[in-house]
Image (cartoon, rainbow, N blue to C red; front, side, top):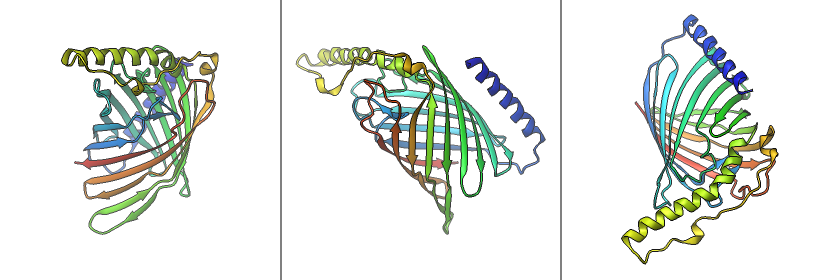
Length: 294
């Protein structure tokens, strides 16, 4: 199955390159963008850590005029005393139009560099290859996404979303965009099953590492035992099955003034097919960001 997905990604890329070479669209400008983001909780397919984990993100990306792009992001967890830099991602992709302003496609690969003792839900995912198609029906936009993720195991997943972009133009180069969106996710959870098994061990090692560092500075220092909640989970074959996993309802709102974009996105993540031992008690989170485009 994984070989089949990779072959299709290659075919899609080859087809997109052919389309690009034939297009006569007006040339686009390359640009650089940077963003600061804050998310109230780290949630992945409706699942989260056992405690609420706010995350700061610093990202930068360069978009070439022919559709290719490169992005990198650092995720920082300020509540930690060690391993504050939890994740660094590097992404390369290519976006193009099959039918201008109507039918678009995008392919990308993202590589993750998690800290040694990260207990984030997606920390077992090393890399993800993604292919996305979207079609604008005027009344609503339909997007379909397929992905292949790998680590110590591998997963396949698909998602489908319906959204409606509402643009309001103001004077002096400013605009407001509101995009109500509903997204459904389905796939396997082999890597999440590995996370459930290794999370407790990572938490203990991270705690011991912090204790050793603190003790070297202050022999009377102690670690708050309530800071980490661990669980023992029996991994079943259910995680290897292709199931509906999550439905997200979100309301991205962004305001652009010249080169700055201010955005807020409240999300209600509704987990499906939840197994014993999974953490799903905090499904609502909000992302705030400020971006600058050069």
